[in-house]
Image (cartoon, rainbow, N blue to C red; front, side, top):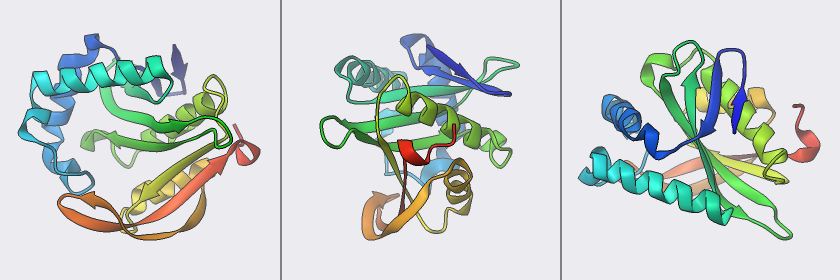
Length: 182
């Protein structure tokens, strides 16, 4: 399963992506640190990334989450990751979205393309109704991405997630199938 846009594609991450994923995480460790929870040292090892990919596979199989690699079409280079997590079925039919992109490619519209593709999957093959995202208010670039795709501001949540060792406030955004302009 692969979804394409003009410059990128997303596809399910597999064990064949292990070395590329580790390389991406190592090259961007410092850059991503201010936007992510503190990861254990093992996160930046082959074994740590193998554990993550095994969890990705279990989530796909249990229909509880979908993680995609973001790849540059012209070179097939892994340049980021986007995930639909915490999938809940039944009356909610929703999930949360998270993503990161290699620092080298930030600010060029690639994340917006990836989010559009992931939403296409969420409202298509995954059959979800709502996708939510939480963003620290100072992360203006990520807020712009969500707004360009059509996410709506839902509210402000104090001390929402522990990021880089601190409980950070977040803006909450969502998009529903009714508002998707895909």
